[in-house]
Image 1 (cartoon, rainbow, N blue to C red):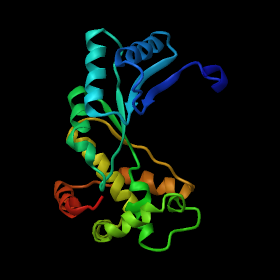
Image 2 (cartoon, one colour):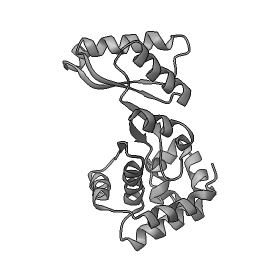
Image 3 (tube, rainbow, N blue to C red):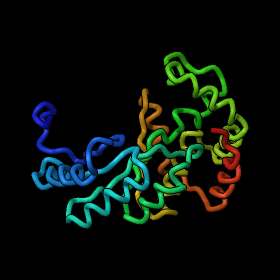
Length: 212
């Protein structure tokens, strides 16, 4: 794989989704060996249960293996299920959180409150429009906060993740996917947005009634 990619090593190698046919120790031993061979710098997981992550970390400690440094999970203002367990595991072990779908697949931009652009994600995930409609008031209230701060919904969503990182004292890195350079510039501007504790409490109140 490295030869095909014309690379000497991979910076971060993550396992995605549980493999029920392979013992955790075998997985961790193999990943650790790749680090020893200098083919991989760091390893992590994505979409495993909190108990699985705990088991992987304990095995790496017990067997003196290289342990995970990241978890990659869905996390945004509207979808916060990982706060129940996985985020606590990340804090316990000091793992970085790579937050995917940080804009709730575009819902937090407000674009699904009106007719979406042709070719948008909703064209192949029509349930996004339904999710947006169920949570229309929540999204509109969040956009009102953004308007008060003279920022966009996207910038509010990203700034919220950055603030969550400060609160939890672990790296929380939004994984951004854009189709236009202007969207990237808009998202990066969120680095200059500072949310207060009062802002965070207000957001918590607004999102307490999110419909899944």
